[in-house]
Length: 259
Image (cartoon, rainbow, N blue to C red; front, top):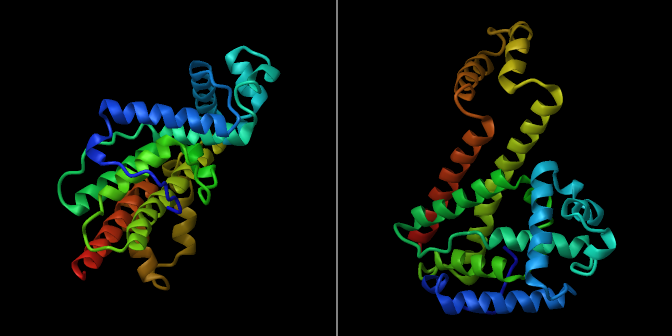
């Protein structure tokens, strides 16, 4: 994850009054460090407008002027709340992270990690622009910090080293991000071409049958046909996510069992 917040919190306290108050206090501190005007409601409105714009048109559509237009204010007025686009994107990412339900982990380790991965999958589905954000230096706001602490609690006490705990979470994000990017690319291709994947395959199937001679490519012919039938029931990216997640969880279970 490459993220090492210094605050330690019990995940079971994530939703109690004291932790909420602490998160609000730290949020104000982060806003001040970013040079954001101390006006909570106005800043929240700016962040919500930017997220809505990114959801609708992608991260590339987010600019100070576009967000200002969405709010019905001047671009110069927006700069009194957020100093620039980079800081705005940090606040957007942290705001999304803060939406994660930080409920106590229950069940097996596999169930805990699967829950984390599926939450990330759903989040990328709701906000695909997150895949465009550089994750090498994640924002250190309260939303991201609280979620990282909660995620680490899922693998605490299993005999893993601190590095292995962090890398386990990083691996989970990676196995989600790849198929999520493929899903987003497929969606954009469908929108730009005006044709679904199924429609494309139906048009190109006759040509493929001519090129892929069954006698010369028996494995490709058999596997391609069977896979094509499976893809008719679910998207390729969803199947890739499910398969990749299951294999990664298998590996993590073996790692823990070896401790």
